[in-house]
Image (cartoon, rainbow, N blue to C red):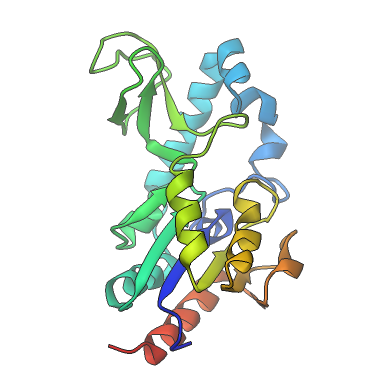
Length: 236
């Protein structure tokens, strides 16, 4: 553990599920309530913007009512105290990492508290509803959409992520299904670069066999224990 100097961490829906945020693939999850094509594609938005805006307004309200759990707080501690390099990449669109204390979070799939204007392409911090089609504060057009990466769109900051994967010596995946690409391929990128790979998950993901090591259990228990191990071994 003391040999690790550059860590890349990927978090997914499982880490926020323990804070009460619905996941998409679990029984009773969001995909059972809505078709992917209807609420998570550009085509679905063009077909029925009201449905999509209302869906994300509901998710934004649920996020505001949720609280960070021990896993979020432990990762924030790791960011503060780890003496090497650390990049925290999340597939989640909630702000629980930030509210848990993390200051440097890369949201590869966008953020619920951000609006993207389809007319001027400016991004705006957004905490209210979008269903009423409010005007863009920059260009005044009524073309705002959630700043979320939908299926068929390119995730954010992929160049930065791949550069980090190519140079890290430890890659850790927390609470991910291993089913959504390109994130599901990060473990292979890291292994190809010679990194050790670790999965912390409630149950084996679709890519569990690709990791050197897999620890199973709730993130709120696994992550604080792992962070304690890292920091106890890390040098000054």
